[in-house]
Length: 411
Image (tube, rainbow, N blue to C red; front, side):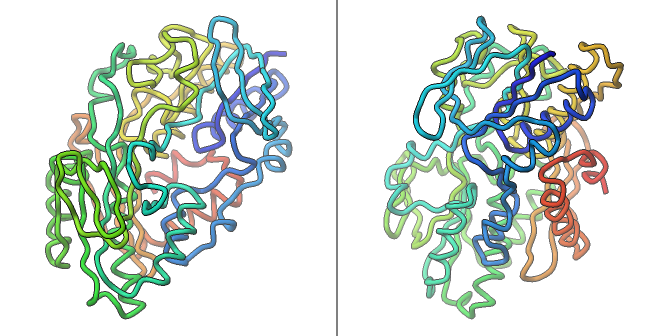
């Protein structure tokens, strides 16, 4: 039986594993390796930080969910991909080194939060990108009595996209930040949270970005609306701020600029997964991401697929693109293994919902201008808040099986 090994238990890895098993059934032996025993619904972590959810309510138990669909699960941290020998090395939870061979491989373990690039992170850094970070931030916000809050993102260590995959050039471009959606969402949630606690008038908020302005992956018109919103609320806006250090009451840029911050809420720098530096060198580009063709096959090793954040072409690093790339990859694999399957065309779009649950509305973004398109929608409404709630329930109900995502994304 053909063996498929999937690395990562986030949107990309889960979608690849579930889709492969659904399309190929007994023709495929699927094993998924993830560094934690759970898959977290990361779009819900901002909600954890303001007390709407607890982190444990948004975790899928992989040891139960995957075997129920005929998929094997192994917990471990991948340390090396040997593309020439079709083998992956990983450390199991006890620290012992293990190996797993494969016929086909899906690299879906995503990017890494490069917190080591920020001096003072462990003492003063805060984020909503992982369950433990979101929980710790909630505890800090509950004790906050007013002062200065800064919300922004770190640098995207993307490389130069060299060598570039065999796909249209406008699908991937250099970006200052890997994804500023969480920054935008927190800029909606935090004022509502502070207002609920009666300390909004005691707090000054600054929004910062390493780019020329925030949200450079959406249209200029939508960015203008966002900046007008910030101005109307009295926020300071600081652009070209490349974060280097977090201190007790301020953050510092690479060129020495400072922003007052008793609490700094940061999308940390993104960079390649640690396993990259030990792996077959020509599998990755100069930034540590995998160049592929339009079906997500590596341009060097055609039995390796890269999906989600690990792929060079997914810019920005969005859950929507992770699911789309994984679905396409497994449709391609099904055809290669003798199961005729329509392979969707990859259409990159910025699709996300920035929620404000405490005030019952959300802003739905659907934008193609980063890729040369003309669509630039940013629509606030109570209905979009309901969509975010339903999407969360859908993910948890299906244990992360995003089979209907292509329909829900346009709903």
